[in-house]
Structure formats: C-alpha cells, structure tokens
Amino acid sequence: MTAIRVLIADDQMMVRQGLTVLLNAETGIEVVGQAVDGADAVEKVAELDPDVVLMDIRMPRLGGIEATRTVTGAEGATVRVLVLTTFDLDEYVYEALRAGASGFLLKDASAEELAHAVRVVAEGEALLAPNITKRLIAEFARVSAAPRAQLKARTGELTERETEVLALIAQGLSNTEIAERLVVAEQTVKSHVGRILSKLGLRDRTQAAVHAYETGLVRPTGY
Image (cartoon, rainbow, N blue to C red; front, side, top):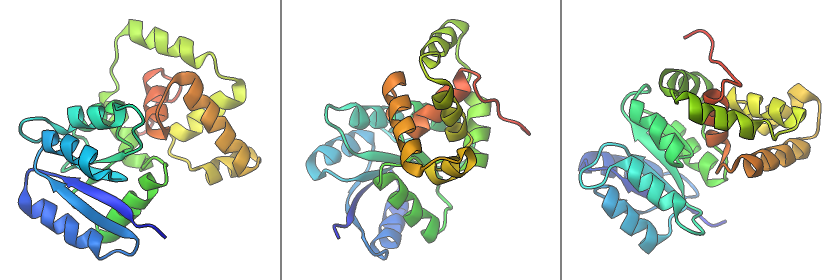
C-alpha cells in the first residue's frame, strides 16, 4: 500500500518538526517535505506532488489562504489541503474553506486526530467536524444579497432528493450516515453527492456545506 505523502507548511520550525515526528510515526503516512511559508508551499507542491498539505493560515510572503487557492485551483490538481489553525473560530479558516481547503485542524489536535484527518482528506472526503464547522460557518458566512440570490438560483437546479442530501452534508453527516437516514444504499448517496458537486460547480463536500449555509438552506442552531 502506497503511503500518503504529506507536505507541512508552517512558518514556525517547532510546529513543522513536531508535526513531522507525529506523522512519520504513523503507518501509511510519510512527510515528504516542509515549507516555511505559502510561496514555498506552492513551489514544494509542484516539486514533491504531495497528497495532502497541512497549511498554516498566517504566514509571511504568501498566506495560507492564497496558497490554498493556488494549489487547489491549478489545472489537474489532486492535492488536498488541511488548514492548521490555533482557534476554531478563526475568520480566516472560513475563507480557506472557500478557497478550496478540504477541512481544518486545530494545532492542539492529538496525534490520533491528526493522522485521522490526513487519512480522511487523502481519501477525497472532507473533514467536517459538525460542531466546529457549523459554528464557524454560522459566524462568518456573510455574503451580500446579490451573490446569495445567485447561489440560491444554482441550488434550485438540484432535485428534491439532492437538496435533501446537500442539507445532510452540511450537518456533517457521512455518506454512510446519510444512507441510513434516507434508507437508501450508500452508493446511491455517493451518486447524489457527485451530481450535487457537478451541478453546483463545487470541489468537495466542504464547499458543498459552505454553499448550503450561505444560501440559507441550512441554518446552524444553538449558537
């Protein structure tokens, strides 16, 4: 089995070294390089072709958001980005999700959580921790009326079942959980998810969740 190739981008050497030690101790994960800022990360992605980038947000020269947008938006890009943040309500994290990040991870996460996050996004899934992500989007999903109307129009292209699946994605449910909720096969859910992303022009489940909150399809409760 081929190891998941990881690039760590952070301007603090101790953070880079600490994450490297933790990940290299995990079976099936290999840290192939380190980047000292966003610009370096963009160069290293092109050079090393990692599967996953652990991307700090606030870095000199080029920040993590723009670096994320660059590496995920490149033609034929397959790399996945996990944003590293100190605070779970960092407003920049929301922008990073919109820029193409597949999820985010707190810097005080355990080794187990770190390895799990890397494996999840490497498999093409989004890392959606329901409580944190919903709170984050509730706090920072503030778009103007015009863009919101345009987003709603695009959402209107979905079938009733696709809209239902999109709402469940935004609540942080996995394909298996959605299948159980709707009493359908998991493969059916995967097909719905694929059509949702295609119709809305979205990269992955994280962006689908952001879209659902921005359009008002789902409204966070309890915050």
